[in-house]
Length: 349
Image 1 (cartoon, rainbow, N blue to C red):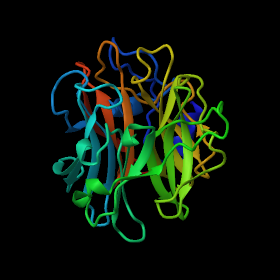
Image 2: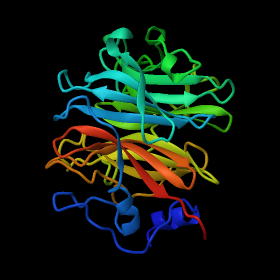
Image 3: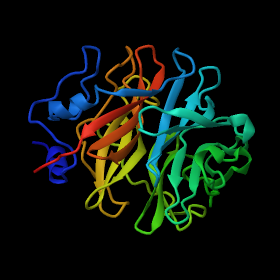
């Protein structure tokens, strides 16, 4: 049994069988983590479709979900809607806010258009409920004022359908070079934020010489952020199956420590800028990571196109006796949709 399976079994997180992994289909690359139990792999073939793209065509995407369940049990989602009719990197035209009583059937309640901010384009949003005030926080990312990619924040709102597009402002931006030839992150995007251990922790993609790595920031109030360690230090290497890109996806508190969900791509995959798979790591301190999926990703799309197997931007929640994973997945025509995978939590030892 792999270290990955042993670890999660000890954490009593997911109920595993003992069979060998099953294939998604003949066209799916054999890139999954070796020795995963079939029962686990099957969980990523069964799903509910939550949000579909506004047009059922290649390069039209509904994705990058950020989901929370508030103190009243209501599910709220912020996601990014993307068109094919714009330059790459600027195709996110809307942050959509949705509401649901059951976490499966969502209704649109608010939208923020890129023209309203204004910003050339959006990528992943992040939705939180303030641990102290109960108000809601919304973060996003994009090329601020047409310049470097930055993490932006909207004013806190009493309800997620009340965020003001005009209140957007940058909260994490690249720092100026000390010397002309400095090699430093020159843009930040796709933030993942958690409130834990008395502070906000933000994990971002930092681009450095056109590669993508994960960087860690902290904040007392969600407004003013400082890097953990050096601005130059990423927390997960470009190595192994994710030797091209690595990105943060989600953080799940466990009985002890945290499950750190990430995504990555390989130089041998078709178009590795977009062709992402999802992996797992573990951390006690929210900074030092122990990678669990070392041989390959945990999950890829079970409905690949001829060239893409994308399963990315996952958001992991515990809901009753299940682990709910909202994620963006590719469809055979290379459009993307948001899916919900429901994994059983181990009920008895």
